Length: 496
Ligand code: F0G
Image (cartoon, rainbow, N blue to C red; front, side, top):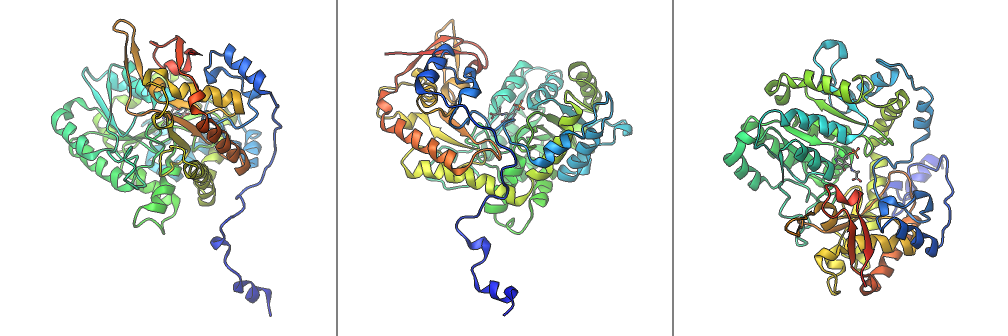
């Protein structure tokens, strides 16, 4: 019997419960090992703010962010050496142009000689947001930008330009009775009401894919289509905050009826066919350590409605970041980005990546930890209020901050508070705290970096803390409670 016949008698590879990773380690870095006592001492010095804790002292997993923390592939490291550091129109710029056209559509990157500038490279996501909202802020006063859940920097850049950000979270987001896979959707009912009432005040609508502020949950194609139709009905352009576009497309493929047989690239193209532009931080699904951009659809509603903005954007970019053909990045960074974008849309990569996050989250869930389900694309979100439900922890004790400090000191894993402290605000005059809708601690999983064993160790550490949750004391803010973006700057101490 021929081996080709024989092999058919065995179960297929795709039916196996455990598949090996679709990559292997190309290069590794040994961690330093630090004791609890040393980490605790360091955290004391850092005022319990985990942002100020030296990453070299993290002997566990650093789950502070999935942004810019990817391990690059050997192809990316090789591409780095092919970088061209010319001051204008370097090699990497053209490679990125090719990839943006291939992935998102030709219409998002005009030839620079066409005199219709529509593609603006920036050094990360937030300067792209700054440029876009600065342009919109000049259109008038009393403006509103509705979205399915603005990220903190997006919200900050909107507000900096005297525009009001408005989050229309899906009503299913915090409702456990919904097993919906698309809890990141925008609440269309509220959106429609807002449009009827205030469409004149809306210069643009924004869908964040996936919804980082709302549990890392994906947005369905159905919702994208509906929001696009509604927005366009009122002559309002729709944009994506597209940081995790490939992960969002994977969820559509897996869970939305009608998409199972479509490949990721086709799904991405359809998603982007509904929008008039997008901002992006390439530090997520671009699989690079630095990079971002703002892309306007040629022939889209935004370019039609605001014909003067593209040229103004180019001027703004030159003043702030540099020539549009490098936009604040070195040529070698652009080379790695072109390769990263290709990898990020590979189905086997996405399947492995998102399953890793899901398995980690489901293990926490199985052990009774209050994580949001279903698990999102890039991170696991734990409900701080539920975690501390039967303890003395009060909302203004910032239990999430206390949790992240103890997790880091005791077990060497770094997570981030994304809840009452990060998204809340404090008025010094009235001494009033305004709390946001959600109170999460987020475990963000860097791409291509950790293995199952690493994440299993985080599960165990979180379980230990849960068992002893009444021993985690409240924190007091010793510095920065009233500051904007306070979570990056504040300092704390434990109360008794
Ligand atoms: N939009 C979203 C949805 C993001 O998640 C981020 C960054 C940005 C915009 C800003 O991009 O950092 O390149 O300026 N998110 C990171 C995080 C920081 O940890 O979630 P950036």
